[in-house]
Length: 313
Image (cartoon, rainbow, N blue to C red; front, side, top):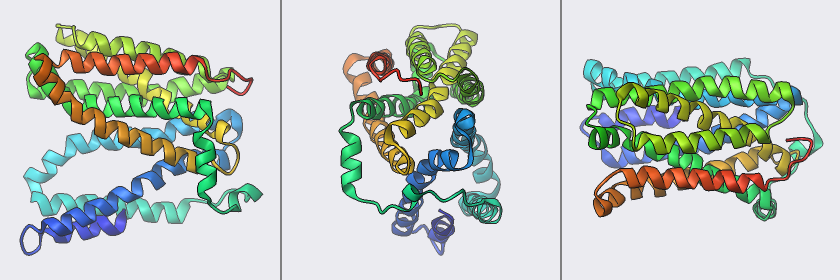
């Protein structure tokens, strides 16, 4: 990411160079599954089992916090320093993060399963497990649906409730802030009680209900509350499900399992983002798009009931 973020700066010299921008942006995107997949891997390597829920939560907070900060500061950077200054700022941030990790990150204790070679057969075997298939769908619908909602939230609120773009941005911020807080509180309670599955079910049930209310609510303050609660419960499910996936995958497969889940989350994002506007055109309202994602989340809740309720979850 650091290398391609620097390369992206040169797409502005001497004039706008789209092929170089596309190449560097694609290169940056290649790093995402490695970063996302490392969260569970580092958690199980560095933390005891009773702390892995909150460790996963703190790790995933970075994803949400980065998204929120980018939404806030990118317009400011662009207006103040131009496109080149904005890209340079993000490149410096990425380089700083890279060096901080190289300097301070310590290797965990080596385990025999950590040095096994990667084979495609392991991934195929993992994908045949019923519980893991359910989690893959959960990431497709949950993360994909959340990304779609965040992408279209301003348009949705403006079209459905007449809320201005600036106020709709505040609602999106409330959703992300709720997710950050939830990703600390819910996993911490899960670690304390030693249970994961009940909290994931609670998260999905509340999130799907709140999202549906977003399509019919009118009062702006109520919408802010709905956004906060939706983010609090939906996004707090992410670290918990990552912990479950590592248990299902087994030792040595945590990173690969996380990377697969990242793939399905991005696939869901692409598909669900793409169908929002066509549904609005066909049915005449964004309400039906919101209702669809709410139903997908509710279906994930029903499927997750079938995940084995062992003593580990």
